Image 1 (cartoon, rainbow, N blue to C red):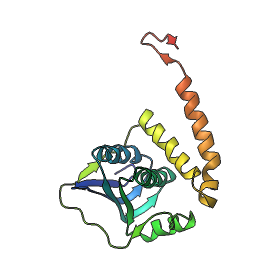
Image 2: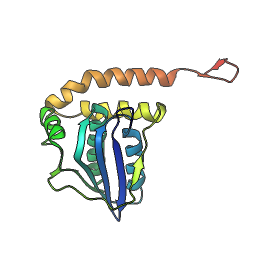
Image 3: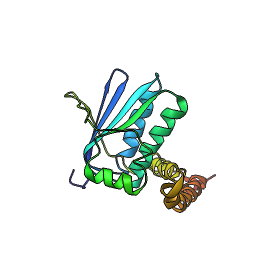
Length: 178
């Protein structure tokens, strides 16, 4: 954790997924968390609890990833999503963004058994960039002030991402092809 990142411990117990966040929750952890949660959605309904009692900070990408989880579970009618015992720092941030009314918030911290999976930070690549863009699109899609503050950022990130996807891919010899 020398890079200032926190850690995410992920564990599945039957149909319930627990993710315990310690320290800072940022864009670096979002792709790995997203991938693991999406893998768990494939076989069927889940309950997803994100334990924030030891989380000291969440960036916009991480928050947008949480919004994405909430929306996908609700749209597919395949489970329940809740934030668990947000720390004072997280509670303040959610309140400032108007998201405290958006999320189901449980007051008792979930407890993981020993042996949970520590999710690694992602290197910057396509999955990382896609998660950043889609997380900000999720935030921009929220009603009211929470969505308004991210619409311009989401538009800019989306245009940048789309332009990057249209760029030709270099071959081994340095030549470019379409």
